Length: 128
Image 1: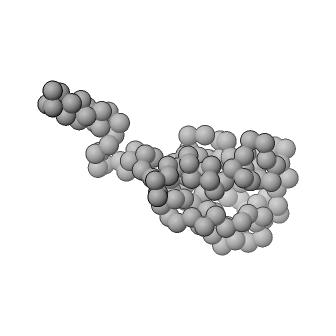
Image 2: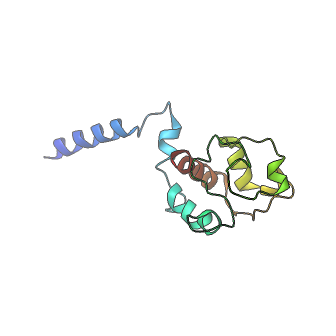
Image 3: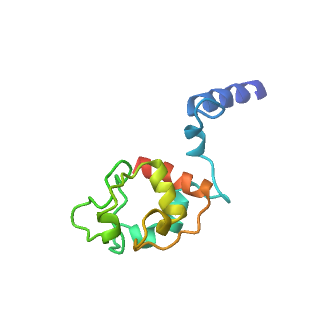
């Protein structure tokens, strides 16, 4: 019985990508910060302004890869409209870690995230 459970666990880990040292993105999507996943951190740090029924910030659905300030129907600040930034991993993390440092004049509050938390949220945003 024990050998069967161990073999099953090895197969599950191999299929899910756990233990694959060549691709950390598979691992970081499932790891947590303080017990929170990227989805939970997003809910805790982002949805109060970027939630489905909130108009403070634009929707973040399909934000990954989008040009900053390009979502139709949202009134962006001049800082974002004139930024010429594409929302890739690097820029999203920079935005979460230091919004004013990336775009002086942006209407975004500091998220108080560390690098690991920002990385987990970007992993979540890639799937939205």
